[in-house]
Image (cartoon, rainbow, N blue to C red; front, top):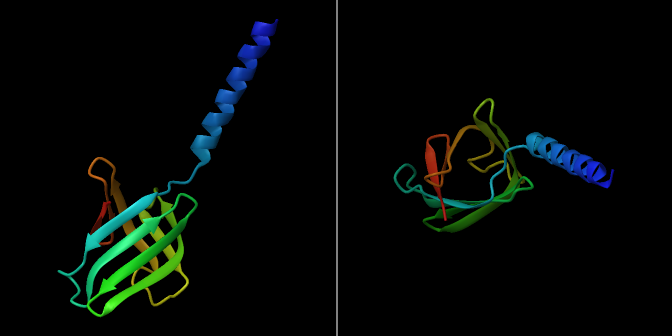
Length: 118
């Protein structure tokens, strides 16, 4: 009887864990950096710091210094998009962008820009 209860409890815990993992939205975690000097002469590089809880910090390194934007992000895997909502709407990454991730290479692509995980 005790073995049956233990087995049932273990099975219920496994099922609950499966439902929890299946319901999680895709997230990023860590710092990604891109060399932007080729496309935009005023921006040398861009660094994105993602947290699993949906927060993002974007630092654009300019020829004259740097500018940091703080906001939130959400990935829509079905549409292949990422949406940024920054406190300062003048950020070039504000809004929806095409998104892909190559976990093996440690890169993400937002629009036409590829960022490498640091």
